[in-house]
Image (cartoon, rainbow, N blue to C red; front, side):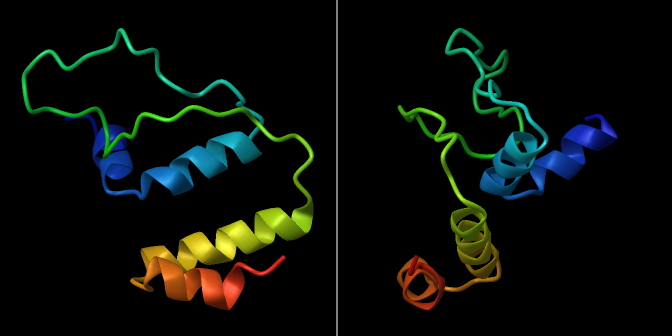
Length: 89
């Protein structure tokens, strides 16, 4: 496995997505036609099927709050506790 793939596989996928968005990459979702060649393998981390749109109206306050919540969850904080601590806008 290439070194970059190994590093990305250890990352929290939400953080990778957020960093890519902050770098200006709006279209970073893989097409559904991409599938594993070998059953049970993965590209780099878990994947969830979602539907949505990019909110270009997000303020710096919202971005900072979301980032604090993600850092807390990655650090092991329960998602509900993270929301109660950092989720108030």
